[in-house]
Length: 180
Image 1 (cartoon, helix red, strand yellow):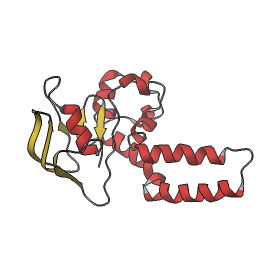
Image 2 (cartoon, rainbow, N blue to C red; image 1 turned 90 degrees about the vertical axis):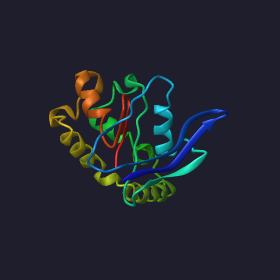
Image 3 (cartoon, one colour; image 1 turned 120 degrees about the horizontal axis):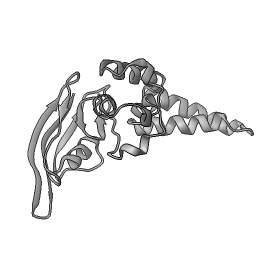
Image 4 (tube, rainbow, N blue to C red; image 1 turned 30 degrees about the vertical axis):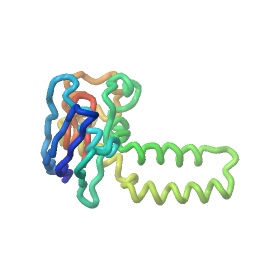
């Protein structure tokens, strides 16, 4: 579960949120709607920890994690559907890329081996070894057929992108997903 407790955010005299209390329970899908400039993206950034509120806290249940993709729909056009979902957990994705690059080195050293071991440990702690199957399961639960998982985002229908990829997880706004 993700909970926002007494979250307040103001920029000068402009108050975006004043003592917001909300809990997002796993298994449900939520919409964040509002006019342009109302603070939808800002609220999601608060939930993700990217922005600190002036007051209040955001709590994520132990063992859960939050993942987020930005609003630029075209950024992922040349990425597979499955990898797009996995990229929502940025730390894990970046770690995977780093460790894979080490293994591809032609002049692999003992120091590289030590670094790879550390990265493998951290990758495992973040759930990296099950990330692909977890992403596939999430996509299946959202009705995105398995044959689409390896397709490029550019090649799948727009209604699937919105429903399945950018709409995955607990909190949704076009272009964002946050998963538990």
